[in-house]
Length: 62
Image 1: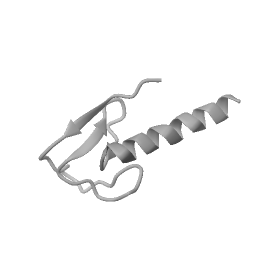
Image 2 (image 1 turned 45 degrees about the horizontal axis):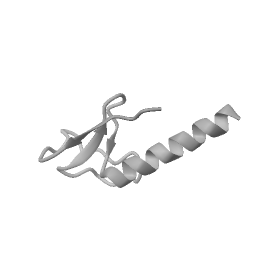
Image 3 (image 1 turned 120 degrees about the vertical axis):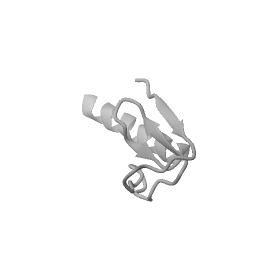
Image 4 (image 1 turned 60 degrees about the vertical axis):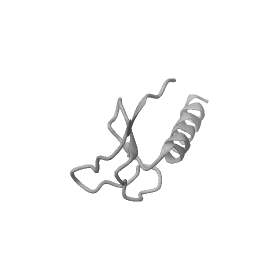
């Protein structure tokens, strides 16, 4: 499984949106996953989200 993201700098989303992992509002620098458009406050939250997603897929395949 491959994940791809874009690092966004100096641009606040039009609507105040929270991080998909921790629900904190994203600031002027954040990550956005290309495939889904979901936003994350930083690379650590994105990595945690991907880790949880991978574990869920392994669990579902068992």
